[in-house]
Image (cartoon, rainbow, N blue to C red; front, side, top):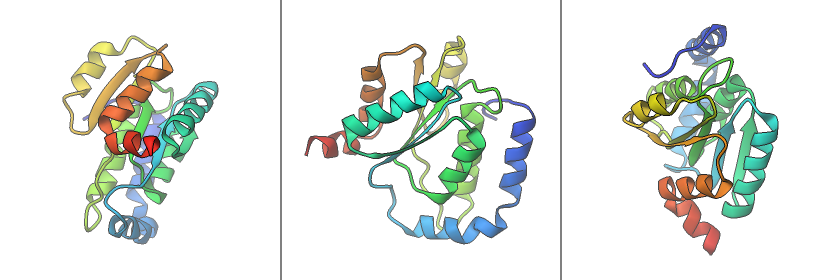
Length: 171
């Protein structure tokens, strides 16, 4: 299982287990286009960093960016909207980005038809390089950037995992 965390993991698991009321929304998402046109979800516990990332992504890719410091809200957003890429902080105090990604994937895979889980880019500043490299072997985890990082490195990673976003921004 990807990642570990505390009581917020339990809250997310409870949210995951009480999805009956949201299944219709998920079914509609599954029936929509296979991939969101141009939307990225950013979850990081540093509000100033998510603001900076959001502005850079909007400017570079001309896309919609949903950004939140709260993993639980990020989970809710992932259930309501389709995304092309996820950018999650690996080490957050409430729940780590890998666990959040796993929970979203479980929900996406349990609707009929299953929803394609977007690629994940993990970012972190807590010396998690070894663990992140291990996670890179997991399906869907497509990149890791240690903090601090140059914003152009994030743009390059997103262009690698979602070349259609990069191509659309050049049009």
